[in-house]
Length: 151
Image (cartoon, rainbow, N blue to C red; front, side, top):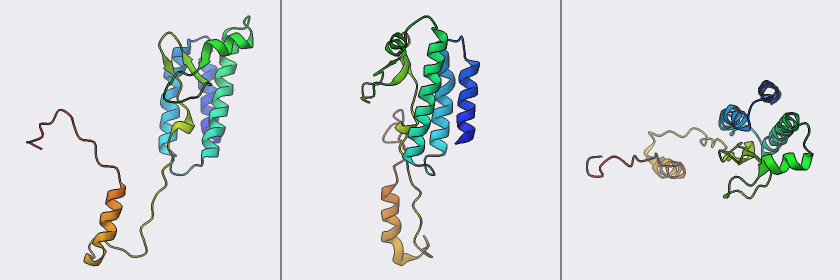
């Protein structure tokens, strides 16, 4: 967690003077990648703490970018409900491009499911167990351009 915080801080500091769209373009892949990679080993508390850290970083970036504007003006310009599906007012975004910064807490935490004892896929007595496990997994995405009769 310390490494991701330092990396985000370094990236935002390097983007001083850049546009909000550049900040979003640079930080979104980092946030989404780290969250997707570590979603099975973290808690929601960690995600919320990282969201608070990112908020402080981008707020500091915004006040640095507009030193002569009030803090109310800065929050009104850069923070709003950019994603209508999420009712979160404190999302950092760019009104011109309608792009916004992803949050760590928007990533669903998925836990690894352990296999019972010494179960084997080859054991015919456990076919119901393995069928139930396969049903719980998400199906592979189907391609819309494939003809249904040729697949």
